Length: 362
Ligand SMILES: [Zn+2]
Ligand SMILES: [Zn+2]
Image (cartoon, rainbow, N blue to C red; front, side, top):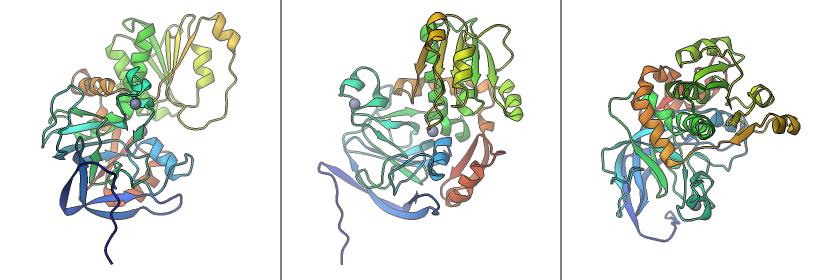
């Protein structure tokens, strides 16, 4: 009996992997991950194959394995990684800045895969592409097995925003860039469309990695930033990410926790902007006081994921002025990829660090 391989049509280049790549497959709530060996991949013309240096566990991975978010199984979870390019499809691939990707490049890449030609992509909303793919979110199969970060390798498809990263930056700084840092960058950029952040007052709800990253980004743009979080330890950490106290109502409120939407809407100054970025999981609906929003001339904006340009800007920040902040400390524990189940359990505990790193090949 042979093995039947079903592949989408089109030119592909077979790349053998010795030793085989490893992917941790999540089969459903309450089940341990299953390890699969992937001895080779078929790269489409614009694909690239990356060997993962480090991946980190994001809150949404934890929500998925706890059954709080529906996901198509079997699935390779994870969408925060840094890695190195080891193979490229025959047509070549390009980074966000337009330069050709090369073997050996150290890179991060977007959560989303977009078509670049639909109406939403053309409007500058690639993260809402009509034919959207997402690493760590799509069932294994049509796009191969290496579709998530909890693996030794990830197959990057054409339409992924790929950003070259400096060798000098620690993997712990870079792995969360493709979710937490880039999302924080997009949230602050949205606020900056309405308000000159130099001299502005900014309140951030939630001292998770998105909130802390947004604090540092806004502080570097000249804002006075306050971070609110029920966890006292996290408040101490926020000070290291540039947070202080506000002496007036905030011009900008960034809600990065998902649990303080009402507080965010009520607290913003007249003429202010509320950026909602934390409400990515189902939560109890909050009353919406339309009259108050109207009378106070408040703008409410939603941010979900980011564009390729925003990922590149987030990386440039980490490599530049962001070096003054303790981003590397966000990864408070590092585990072998093979211990994924224990690492995910650890990530659910109240004392869990902001991120747990996973290292393949150990
Ligand atoms: Zn994430
Ligand atoms: Zn599109």
